[in-house]
Image 1: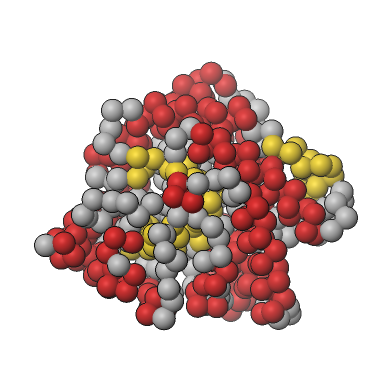
Image 2: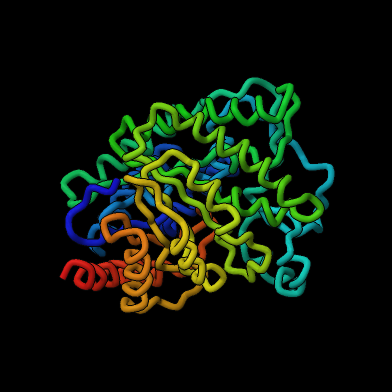
Length: 392
């Protein structure tokens, strides 16, 4: 992943804002009212359009926008795994906030904000309460083959390479709802075994695999307190071990690992500092690390790399563009964010990226699509400025 020409390459995290036509058809599909052929045709056109637009902007390593995922970046996998049963949550009331995660420091300290914010997030149709009731196995062969075919067709003839995101075991099994396996370890590793099929399909299709694991940082705020930091580390270590198990046989140079602290444009006061989880992240055997580093809560953490060694042969893909604001970053700020990290880990080891997806799923977007493209344009301009400074 570090073999590059003498410039800073650009990429992003994967999820892009879906076009209205595709969103409408996905909503119809969710209630069993979609014409499946019409949806398939629309999906293929939409992927072709979004890939061409990325190439036009100047992004080097593009994605399909995750357009083939009918629900969120993580819960899509529940439609591709056997062994789970969706049930009503007896603890949830109709009046409860529609959000993907439970109470956190943010929600406790800013209840008035969240009373308004939760209503805007579009999660009502994506709430799932899945229990493991049998052996977990992969059943998404048709879906991943469709997504791979659409992306392959879309990049043909374009001066780009492509990546495809897939969820990490820890972001599927962040809480154990399991009635089948004898232990949490057996449960998490069974999910890892199943996910390996999707990972291999992405590699076999010729793409870079990106493993998304937002729940690795997020669970610290979910668990601590009442749990201790050591309890969290044990929880996280099991899931990092399971991910490395799932990555066995996957070429490191064709894989990367993405973490963030959730795409919510909210206070984030309970986020665990990166320095407290850096050793966990760097255990993951991949060729690159895509880490949220541009938002106001975490930008200062670039200094962690003054004391932290990037493993040999691996790339750092810092978020130098944030999804949490509609303000478009100035290219000179993007350049500054890239060059200060290049000075610490080496210019050949940095790829310019984004903090998180511009859409958490088909129905939850973080910025307006016109601003998304402006931000990606600023990323490309800033990377070009950085390249001139770093290589002359």
